[in-house]
Amino acid sequence: MNALLEMLQKGGIMMYPLLVTSVIGLAVFIERALYLRRRRIIRNDVLTTVDQIRQPEDMEKALFAFQGQSGPFLNIIRTGLEKRNYPRDEIKESIMDQGRQEARNLERGLVILETVAGTAPLMGLLGTVLGMIKVFKVISEQGLGQTQALSSGISEALVSTVVGLAIAIPALVAYNYFVHKVEDLVLEIEKHSSALLDRFYVFANPTQE
Image (cartoon, rainbow, N blue to C red):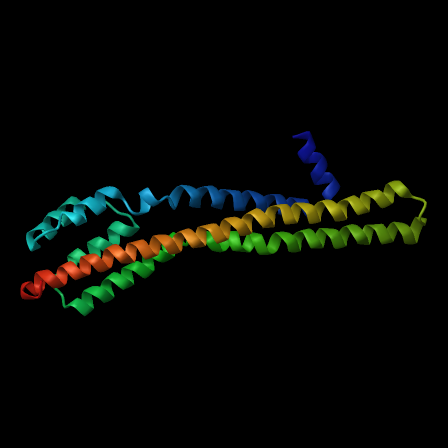
């Protein structure tokens, strides 16, 4: 705790918004890491229920099994099942609409990580500028002999830059990781949704099986 307070003092006023930014970024990272687990998004019980749909009557059973439950993948499958008697194009459009909505939910919070990654270095740079202003002010008022006053300004300039980069780099890595993970999840959901749509077509056109 003392080391943190000392760093805050050395880094100057910009250390406080940087601290808030780091806390926000860490909170979003933890929340997304817990939420975007594959077994939570693409649940095995939902996959099992969908795989057990072998005839039209099984779709009603699946809808009954999904009652009172929710989730990105489950919501898309439920949409398809509820529209099962509609024309194929309408079912597909409904699934795509629901899929876009669920994709936005999967991406929720990622813009915050992206913002943290972009603004933290700028705040660090601002702290650097403020620190250098102090250095030049000391030089203009007291000359180059005041090493303690000069070192304070230089320390403020360097610490804020380092902290800004230390926040931005992990935030950027986390953002890219989660974006890639969301893309993988969306692709897998699309694969299972397409398979279900094909099954609807077979049920509606048994002679084409």
